[in-house]
Image (tube, rainbow, N blue to C red; front, side, top):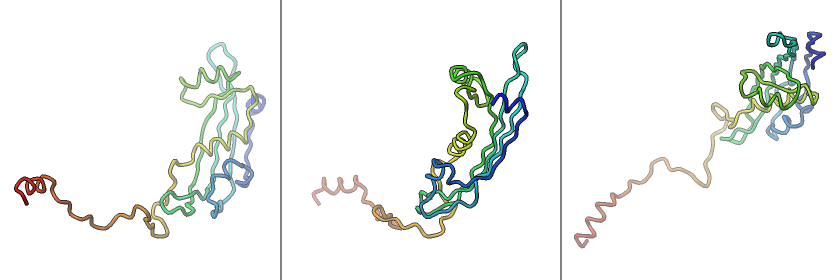
Length: 169
């Protein structure tokens, strides 16, 4: 990553979602991805603290549309995932853990050597909605076991019933 940043490296690709096993596993069984996962990574060196050497940074962007399972109708719901993040790299995991809480950007370790493809997949997975749903489901949603009637029957006031019991009705 350091050499990539020192060279001002840029990588981009369009890959099928199937190339990312964990992301592909999130798709609806009957759905198809609307297109490939497109990603781009731009690395650069930025000045560090005064007296410190420059720090590697990575700008990651990714976009993909996946058919996820709508939690209302259980059909495929197309969801667009967009990633646009900056990462600052530090020497090791211990430093990354220590600095990540206090910094606005994401902090990653140079060692062990990070995998750019794994990072792309991780970031896409983190963009998945907790509860994917259509805005309006394409088919009416039928409620089964817990079917709610249109109008609930009017309940008798428990105090009125108690009053009738006291009066001997």
